Image (cartoon, rainbow, N blue to C red; front, top):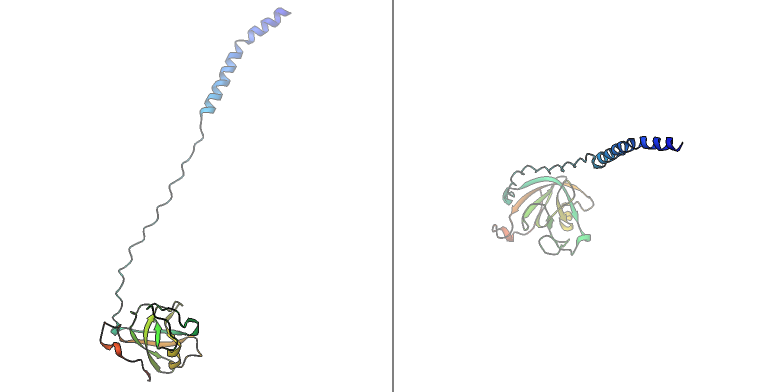
Length: 177
């Protein structure tokens, strides 16, 4: 019987190396194979904005007229610095405007009662939407709007900033139109 066992073992020897060879080939092929790694697409380039149209020059102070909503500010800002560098005085006839040059004198007319007051622009603002000018407490008093938060006005420049024309010494006035 020993002879049969040896003979059976001997006949399996040639099969074993072939099976082992196939196993090694399969491992080598699958071990070397790499999964497809997709490289991430580069991020889209930021769109370059179209050039903005050239900014229009500020209107000449003598040609400036505007109509809109006004407001006033008082005690809560009294003594604080304005854009012109001076301290805000709620009892002075001053105002804040977004674009008019500092020092420009403007006639503000209340469209509801016809009262007018001349103010000097010494600050920037208003920063609330849809408002065209912020007036000092004294200017609001002259227009008769202290109890009102917002009111309709028209603006007309009466003198440019000092050094631009000779109307620097024009006193602030009020009138009933």
